[in-house]
Image (tube, rainbow, N blue to C red; front, side, top):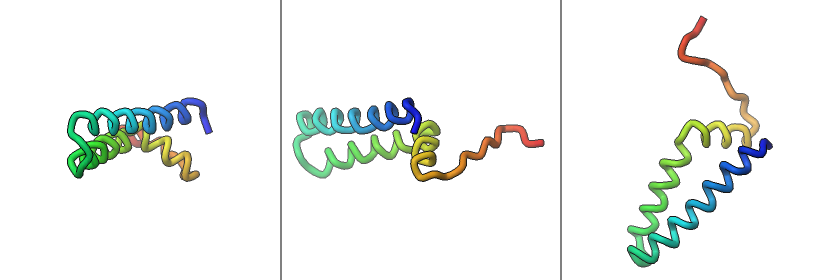
Length: 70
């Protein structure tokens, strides 16, 4: 695993926990807080960088198909 993959996963976990704490303080404990944090995680995990990191974790090959195909 690459060092930057570890940093990306660390950022994901740390920012999710920090957001959860802030949301609990501002919104209280409840479904709105969980929905807010879940929406953040969905947004973050669908970014191209995190998709590549999670594919590498699963051992899938990364296709390097660009915009232009020959």
